[in-house]
Length: 491
Image 1 (cartoon, rainbow, N blue to C red):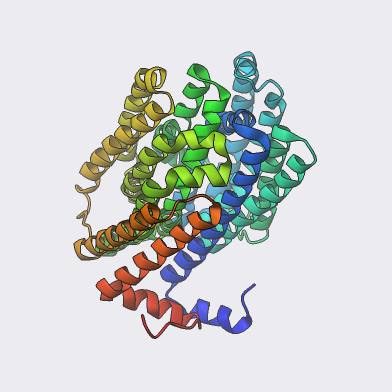
Image 2 (cartoon, rainbow, N blue to C red):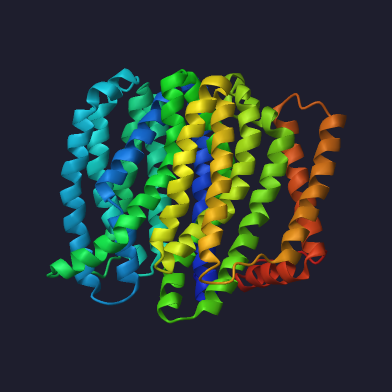
């Protein structure tokens, strides 16, 4: 917990920077907890059992999309606009409950197929998870739509911390995959109750007009989200069909490992969506343009060095962090790290399209890429296995970025801050040379030597970047000093 004087300093920071900082800190904590827990699960359960859990998460993602119908994003959009908030919130709850029945029917109808995929005992858990997901989704979307980004992010952090703690305990007691699923559901319940305390919205009478306005926006959010879920889960489900659950486990561990490159993007995307929505309503297009360009820079600030470091050390990191059985995922990891750099542009551009009320164009981008993704998965997975899944994901992400940029450029200038981005590449290049020399000189025979290489690379990258880019140096220094933390004189 922050001391009182540090909390006061935090509240004095510009609202966007403050919320971005809270979101970034929350996401960083979440990523760190997730990494440590996944390492434990991988060592204890092995690739096959972890693969079953990965398949459960994929099924939950697909069926929860049916239960949401895109109305979550539509509710955030309408609530964030500030008009008739209570009516839109109530209409959203009504629609979510109605769609729950549809998702439950679909799960039951497909239960035989799910059982064939090795998740026989997971079907009842899946139904329970869908119910818990409604409670969590309603409370989080309510606070998020009201602009309380810090609350929704803190809720997400509590959700994941409680989930992980319970999962660790359950796995330790021998509950295996069922323990992972039980913790997943419990975390959503805890996170939902946290958000519920802060919601200022009340139940109110709504009309068909409110439903129509939610629907007209949600249909494109639903279709666009469907495309995003294809990127997230189609490869997992098709790997489960063509390959073994062990292959699924190795692939998902490699994918999860690359999450370290994305948490800045996730934090900024979450923070900027309601802000850009309001700026668009106020016709402040210049603020949108500048904020998007800066968000890309800060996202690449982490994504690029993580990718470069992963290319050099990925095989040893997988071996020591997750176990010898997961080291086979190194080739796929190398490709997936590049995917996360492309994700910076995909996530931020599609977020911006949705926030400026262009969900149809967002769907055109993600929908087209989703079709390409499925076709490439079907063609490449039987031949190349998990590497084929990674290649398919990379190609489709590039397609998504190209289409999304085309449509976004029609609305606002889409720019990249060339100077800072070049400095990021320069610093990452210097880091790569030092880490590569370290690996050639010192055999990475234990985890401490690997961590030494990671630490050395981080120091070199940070030092070169702050020396090369005075703008980023001054911004980061101002934020650190404003929070009351010391700033090294040599920087």
